[in-house]
Image 1 (cartoon, one colour):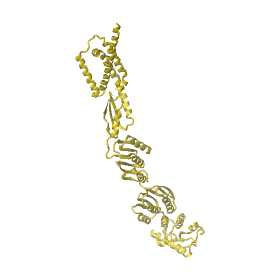
Image 2 (image 1 turned 180 degrees about the vertical axis):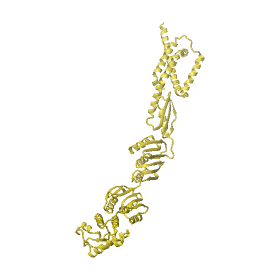
Image 3 (image 1 turned 60 degrees about the vertical axis):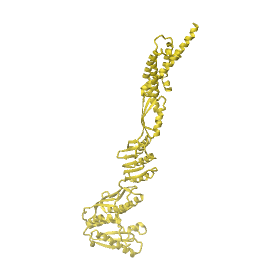
Image 4 (image 1 turned 135 degrees about the vertical axis):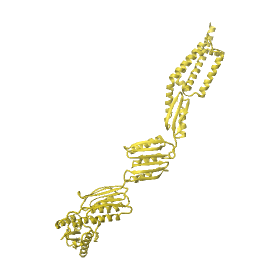
Length: 464
Length: 98
């Protein structure tokens, strides 16, 4: 042992090459050592959910900065790095992701893009939301402005995914989740979109509720355009369902006796209440115009065009609004068609015959009340009568052979008189007209078929 | 430590061999040795450095360099001790024969 002490006093010269070795070892080994530790620390954190992860190695000391989503997750991440072989010290610069209170997430849609904003609980759910937005919205640009925050309510992901589905149904608008309250505003893309969104909101996960749903529906439009040149009526826009569609088409066919009805209507939900009760009389008013446009937008009815004569314009203006259900508005912009040139008796008779060949004045069954569907035809007959002011006209009523002769005779006379009353009310002088009833004595066709009977029930205008 | 050994076995082996060689020479070396007070001061310095390394007070790269230096130095000393002892034993084997 004593020898060892004695020898050791002479070991010092070897320290000089040792120091050289040491210096070279430090010089060459430090960068690879640091790279090796950084790679193995990163690998140790592979399965840990962290945001803004940063690892810096100096010598064998690792500076580890990251945002963790829970205290447990933060501690276990630090422990993972500490347990990497070779790591001497870990400078723990980790922190928890800030907690959002209230936890607000939003999706906003404008014309060209959808912006996702607010807070998202985890990188995975953020990615899932972005992916769902891109998949669900087709070619629309998706802008991500979401932060990561703690404090999301339970089942946040499924609520947000459900709401992202709804953003596709909006033309523009914003959907917000604030803690567990959902608010929606904006304009639905299609008719029925508002209802579809409201239905989907019933499937919100447990705990979530709708604080405000201010989604507006686009206006429910129904349009009809009467074109005297093409002799057509074009119906376009929406009707509530196929039954109403069929009923309106039938009404149009009856009221527009000489025009071709072009039906471009589509069925859609979202019609305002009382749609049929408003549209049917409005179509009746349009049928009394020479040319005109009817626009029904939500509960507002706008009718514009030319009536055949002054009194008709007044009747339309005054009469239509009265038939409408509660809450409906009517705006009329009715002018009067310029009077046509006068014609002589022969032409007058021809014009009456032409009109009555296209359509017939209809009455309630077995009675002398004129059916409102005939208003358009009567207006045209009145216009014609105004063009031959010097001519006297016989209004001839005819019936089919059903029922007793006496009843038919009386009915034909009363119906002829009802027509004269209508003409007089329109401003024609009563003394130009004579009511004649012929009962079933002058049939145009056999009374053995329904078609024949229908032809025989008629009012004729005969110039005398 | 195990990590240092596996990562730097080449340098550590070199230190050990250097120590063996130095120890082998030291036994028959006639030059000036280190005086006792200096040895004492050097021991204190070594202990202080070991204490600094164990308590990890020196951060970053210098800390790593200190660890590496101390491990190399320890192996050098071990090499010296073994080398000196071997040379001494070898000499004692030869003397009776001579």
